[in-house]
Image (cartoon, rainbow, N blue to C red; front, side, top):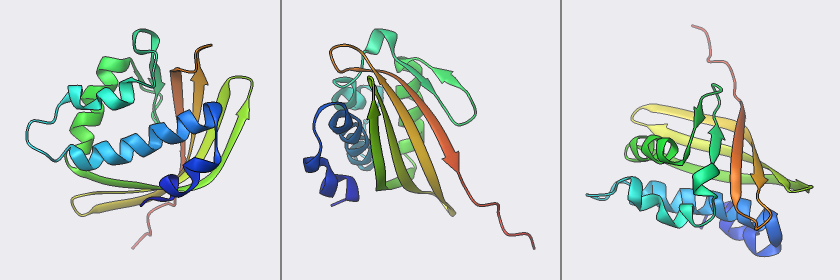
Length: 142
């Protein structure tokens, strides 16, 4: 059980949707290693988003629509391990700020970052935009 699993029951409304999004990502990153997993495998996540209008702005300011984002997720998740530890969540006027400590591993590369994901919602509580911000330590110099 992840830390998101442990805290999600204490939230309702938009914060719960944002937490559920992170919870589903964790589940699907594990499922993405199964043969035949592809962009359609992200359907449980799609239920939370406004797919025609969805925009994700990543850590390098790359902008992706839903189709581009699920292609990206599929490539990443097929070789990555990921987990997030809950830090804090805040809601303000249809926007949710979710802070996590994210741990990932791809092959021998491991990273631990602090993240803030900003979720913007439609009037019917679907995610229409996510912007991701990261903090990480500089690699040790040798």
